[in-house]
Image 1: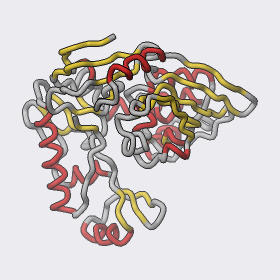
Image 2 (image 1 turned 45 degrees about the horizontal axis):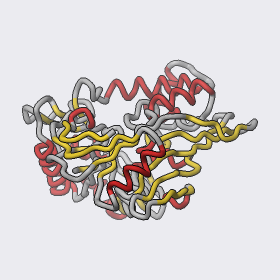
Image 3 (image 1 turned 90 degrees about the vertical axis):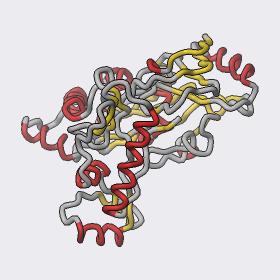
Length: 335
């Protein structure tokens, strides 16, 4: 299906009003090649569930959205299962499907908005788990070369909230499916603070996948606004990593700063903590602002323009840098 001069409000969880000149909605693998030929290598913007987008203007460049659904079991043995999942599947619904089946590895990623096709682009992660740990391969259509390509895990060059699809081949590879390898004998990751606290408080000795998923859902719902009620794109900023030397200097100024040691003598620090220390928590600019419970989340109270939210993010970036010398980076894709 091809839509022309269409409102983008239903296509972004921020609820920003903008117009798209043309959107190609893909419903079959055959359409991928058909529409790709019509585009003839022209510049294009690929969108998924719209949960990581900020539209700052009307979009004249053609857009393409893969709506193809389906889950196929490729292999299953006593230890693991291999699932090929089409890009149009809703991510959270896929997580619940796996939890119900007893397939372990993504239960910590419950309630993350978006589509399966978008998960490798961003290398989504939460509560100690990144999706790269369970991705076996990614099937994508090369919009420039007009051919199919299979990417193994290493070729995806996954990093923190990053991949080859977000950088080198941004808007060039239309993901058709993602193949996951999931465990049948769970080794849950429960070390994240709030998760560990709830499990200990409720006296759960060996939590099931369903219990873990429900705990994650309850934590997310308690501190993150529902995009269907209050427009937002989840975490707007990445958690910065700084050198151990820079961290020690920062720690002298901020003795209570939380930290997570990384490889190569780097330390990751919570962007939300820095933003709160800078005084931005609950900041309100009438139509938009910073969420009162979670500083990483910028919100659209109603009627906000994308460039206004972008300016707010820049004001926060500048202020945090001026006060603490740490440069925050946006996680959201700005168009």
